[in-house]
Image 1 (spheres, helix red, strand yellow):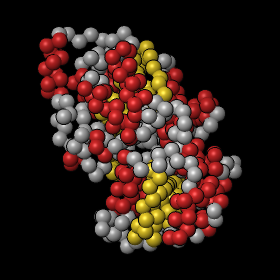
Image 2 (image 1 turned 180 degrees about the horizontal axis):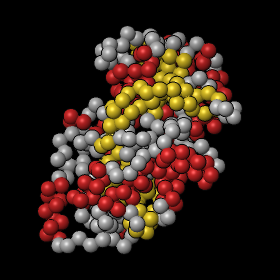
Image 3 (image 1 turned 60 degrees about the vertical axis):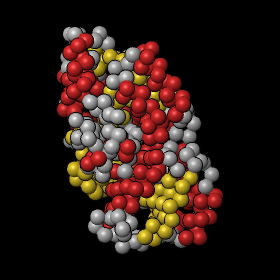
Image 4 (image 1 turned 90 degrees about the vertical axis):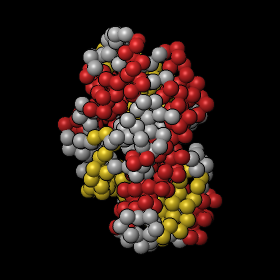
Length: 397
């Protein structure tokens, strides 16, 4: 059952006066090893860059960031979360990449009445009937980027589409999102094409020989894939090497066609369309500073994962500042987080009643920039002020 802030506020009144903290502790658990490590590393680096820009502080108080590698294991993540909550007594948690891990860790975090600021994982459960006042997602709901791709594939007139995704909660949300705007029975605007096959892989799989043989037999005109981290890198390389790119157009959400994948794959990524709520060439002061400082600090282009980690830190900073460091006042801290008094690198957005963003989603295409570097280029807007499909199921008060 979601914790209600009315009961929470009453408990705080009984506890007496709330004093300002002398430091802010953040428990950062993420995937920092294995095939998904690149995603967690980017979130971590974006978060750390923001802390550096804030002079090592959050809301004017010294920040202590305690980092743990979940090894892409729910059990390992739960152990790390238990330590953060019981021994370290952190004020916030963040960092989780994968939704199955978020779903495993969430109940313990919420029961402890600690705010979790998600810089990535946005499972449908926490957007809908399992929404919780202690969960905020500063990135997106899992379905959203896939919904945007579904609309683009439909608008471009592709008729015979294969979907490839891992068999885990985030993968299932990907299929739901794509089909919500593409498949004939589910698309709001009445799609005319068909999903010829939904191909589910193991999470962390790196060899796609069997799946590519299946795709070759279907002969789709378009293929939508969501394969995070090293999965997507290997898939694109093997897809192109098999000659399938000659007759099948690839589409992906931004996280399967971002700077880490582009750097690893190179020219075969050229011409791939993808969706995102952020792009490195978005023209606003916060984003220009973020992109320039990230390249200077780490010697590479930032990904959307890095942008999300960066925003998560600035969201915490604004909330701590707004409550004048009194982070034990959970009701006040919740209101401060909902107010979102910081400027995001993506531009303006707001939180819906389920604590997920209402924001724009954009079309990007991979090509060469003026210097000849292969990278994403912003093409246009797919959705404006787009909300997730599950908010009506959220009964949070």
